[in-house]
Every structure is written in structure tokens, then in C-alpha cells.
Amino acid sequence: MLIDAPSAREETVAIAQHLHQVHAQGLAWGCMALLCADAASLNLCAHTLATLKLPYRVRKKPGDYQPGADGIQVMTIAASKGLEFDLVAIPGVGQWPAVGQGHDSALHELQVAMARATESVVIGVAGSSALATALRQNALTEGQAPAASPD
Image (cartoon, rainbow, N blue to C red; front, side, top):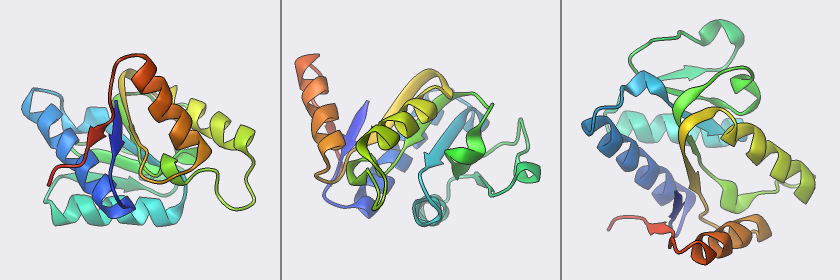
């Protein structure tokens, strides 16, 4: 599923609201992860979850991960190495590649993050990067329009 929004903040809110809906349908908070490309995105996600009063746990280093904890797992893509979650949300892809990062590197990072999901993936594509454009086009080709952020 793609989530498109006018800004990174609105994208993160839309992702959090989607996670809340999925939880209401029965998926435990601890089975969800927000995988972020960098610390700035991680901090935005944590702030948004706190503002919306959703349970979460931030993993900044290996000892911070608590399997089975009742909260959305928030961490960088690098910190997610070796982990799996039923649902993985990847915010900020519409801004990839980052300055100094090549397109192939960004695509590899996206593939790594997506591989952490065992059931479903939510990708935030707010922005105008070539990667976001390609993802939107692929969704349209498959007959799935990106979800817009709720007003």
C-alpha cells in the first residue's frame, strides 16, 4: 500500500492512522514496525505516534529491541537487520535518494526494509523523487491508486 500526502508530517500522520486501523482489526501493536531511513525520520515518527497517543518503542541500538513488547517498533532500516514484522511501514520514500545516495542504493535500502515484512508493507511516497514517481506509476499499472492522507 502506498500513502501519498502533501508533506512528510502529514504522511507520517496518515501512516500512524493506518496502523491504528489495522490494530483495531486485530493486529497487535508489537507486530508492526516503522522503519526509517535516518534519525530525522525516526524522530518525526516517534513524535507523531506520541502525539496520537499510540504505543511505540524506539530502537536506537541493539539492546533497545524488546520482542513481544506491546508497541509499534520504531527504528532505522539499518537497525532492523535480521528482524521480521507482520506489517512494515516505510515513511519518507518520496524523498529518497538522500543527498549523496545513489538511486541504486536507495532502491536496495527499500528492498531491505520491505523484506522485514511477513504480511504487508505500507510505503510513504510524499515527495517528488524518481523513486516515488516509479512506485506511484507501478501502483496505477496494477490498478491501485495511492491512498491520500485523510483531511
